[in-house]
Length: 415
Image: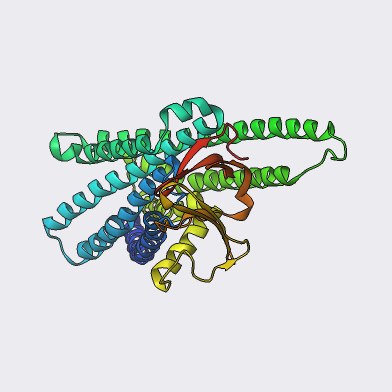
């Protein structure tokens, strides 16, 4: 009698566990459907902005790494997440072996896109660390070309690792455990340490330049030793950097580490409850791929301005560079050799200033520059020198085609 009661209780508990499993599975299907749409839109919008690049500011090494990151995330939302939705629905209605072959494909593609995403994040972090800590090394080794090569190599490695089980006889347990340790756990720890180091180095650099500026101002008559415009910009940069570091750290801890812990538990001691927890943790992990563009791009002003301009140019602007522009400075025409005229204009718009020297003969499109980041330093002959964001730009006036701009990075990346 007691044995019969125990058996009934066990069967009841077993049935309840599977009821919870099917409920979580149904919930996962709905969440994955929403996540796929959100991931495709958030990353697709950035890739659209990167392709258009109306401000001509998205071909830097950091922006190239972000484009590689969002490309991997875009494929995750376009293929991986819908594939898991199809698998859950297919497995619920059929016992065919094709279901498990399809799951194998979905898993291989997820290994490719997710590992590429994490590795590109690491490459982006290393680039930012070199920019702040070692500007000379950055100038010597980091360029748009080297960034593109790095992204391509990461994609090749991610594809090779994803196809390892298909090319060789690899133990599934060892393969998944290696991926968990190498590409998820260690990579996220390295990212956290790296971005904390970047933040600390940034604080030291900001404090050093702040003290230098205050000392210069204190030594001049009529200039109080207080925060000037440069100091205010530096403080805003520090604040943005703190927010970015905190957001990235919180995102990695909340979305990635629960998945690492639950997957390790399931690998070494499989239980139905543990697998249910893993399914829930996987949903948290996939949110990371939808949020990456907001963490790395959309919180920054230049990306938001680029998006607005790209949308305006695509939707309704017949002459997007000059539409709605108002002259706030008179034209200055200077005749050069071979009848090439240089025309200096400044246009005013609601959200951006357009400042450029235009070749009248060739009709070069103006370069969009925010007013606060564009200041004429000097101009003599056919060469003008400007400050532009983190760079010093020398504009050479050509005799036939207007401008050839040469950008030389400064040692202070936030000034």
